[in-house]
Amino acid sequence: MTKLTCDVAIIGAGTAGLAAERSARRNGARTILIDEGFGGTTCASVGCMPSKLLIAAGNAMHAVKHAGVFGVEASGKVDGVAVIARVRKERDAFVAGVEASIDKLPDDVKIEARATFAGATILSLSDGREVHAKAVVIATGSSPAIPEMFDAVRDRVLTNESIFALEDLPGSIGVVGAGALGLELAQAMARLGVETMVFDIGETIGGLKDRHVAEAYHAILSREMPILLGVDLEAEREGDGVALSWTGSATGKKRFDYLLVATGRPPQIKGIGLETTGLALDEHGMPDYDCETMQCGTAPIFIAGDADHDRAVLHEASSEGTIAGRNAASYPEVTPGTRTVPFAITFTHPNVAVIGRIAQDDDADSVIGTASYDDQGRAKVEACNAGLVRFYADRRDGRLTGATMAGPAVEHSAHLIAWAIQSGWTATEVLDLPFYHPTFEEGMKGALRSICAEVHAPTPSDRDDGFVPGT
Image (cartoon, rainbow, N blue to C red; front, side, top):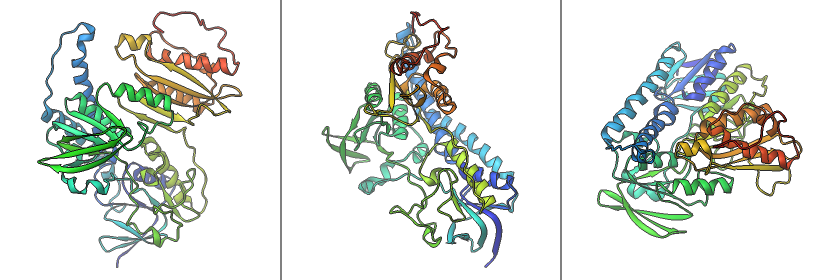
């Protein structure tokens, strides 16, 4: 058996794995990066980018359909084959960019094989070789979960990955799972003329913990497609499609061409031999790890990205990979990394953003400021005046601690709030910054003012708080 040695071995060449390899090498380590296919990151190939391409197509058609609101006569026809063709073409360009960066790595760094642990720092490769490292980074990512209840109709089940293998848009689709992935793809399909319904066994939408924003968001999205929460499902084959029955908060049955199952993406850690490492594993086979150092227990094993099932977004995967790679290179000296405020965006329309710590109405240590976009000036101009934002702040001084936002252009304005939270700013300090008129960002001012009033904090003395048309 051929034995390979290195300082740091990284399993997985996705966003986290690539960041870990760069970080470890930058810190002086000899690295080996192991991946089964080097097929591009999840984001580029089947995640962020192709989904946003499909969303963009849906938004284009939605704009055509609603042009009459502005006195503009317009008509449009969706060419499903052309829609999918553009998604694939642009997606492939993003993947090619990732592949080009991987190609720049030295040949002795890249190994195309499957790796499994044969000990804490020993990896057995599917090509018969063995890697002995001083430390290992697990960056194996995640994959879609398809519950057993769909086994009988599996050939008509799509995931957020396989949906992009379609040649044309389907006539109808049932989306199982009202999380971010399911909602983004469902709305895109609905806007492109696909008959779409969304189902979820849970009672909330988008994973939102603030029930007020969740209810507003549910009501807005339900204008475009039915979204049934709190339902149990049964699926059976019907011709070349699927008959889906539901009971619970509602009862019914409908045939769909396909089901899109978006019920979660668990970490890909099964079958990689973690039981041989000496790590303590939970009932799901997950090791305990420190989210500041990315170290698993006290072992020379680190984990990053979707594999740790914590903050499953690209910028966090990149950050975690960087921290894991640095600490793997310096093991046994391990130091905490600098983590950013938790921040996630759902790219439906309206956008949704969840930032920082989410407070509940009965939280004695927090105050909550609320603002509606239903009558907001710029939103009315653009005919998208719907949404609700809730900001959470420390009751002692009005320092912002979190936010749940559902509203127009929230993907942009939420960045400002995330930066404010990470910078430790109070509602007063945010209000003292410039707000241009007329903009969507002005819609946040009411929530900030109410926080100031609640904690008896001053609003900026040199800012006029009088009436401004359209705010």
